Image (tube, rainbow, N blue to C red; front, top):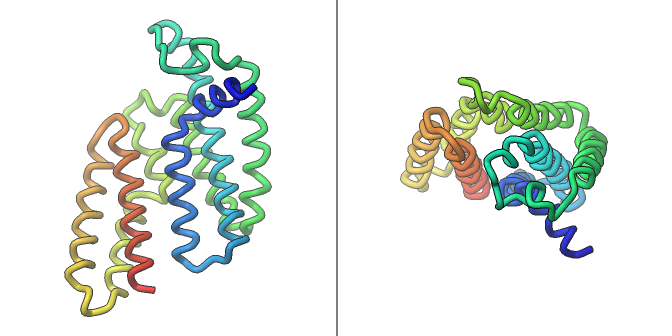
Length: 204
């Protein structure tokens, strides 16, 4: 049972899933949400990310088997396709009410972000538009940069050097996220958001 649970967890792309969830929790705390609200945000993001990760392995299953991938639990039989499909469906079913419990506006935004992740899995990743789900899921690259500018403008005067460095770093990461391929855009977007979280904490 434990091995199956570990294998099921391994099929959700745990690295990205938990990185995004941690980021959401840090951001929720940085903007001053209470513990209960932070927990709700984390739960909504976690279930959404789990659904994206599991759907990715389900969509890629035939191709992964054809190329002999041995690093995926779903391919080598450590977890069944039925188990992953069930877990994915439950994650989706939980994501909707958890997201909307955060407020209709915020909930709909999050559901659009989750839908962007699914769109990537279902075909956009193999097209020239593969960058679009990243942009949507992280609020859009321009939005990330403009968040950084707003935070920098609101920073204390005596922290100008730190604020300027954060702005330059965010601009560089935006360029990487826009121009790079593979996992680099995802990592750059995460790094950009972490910079914004750090600056939010700095100016509070």
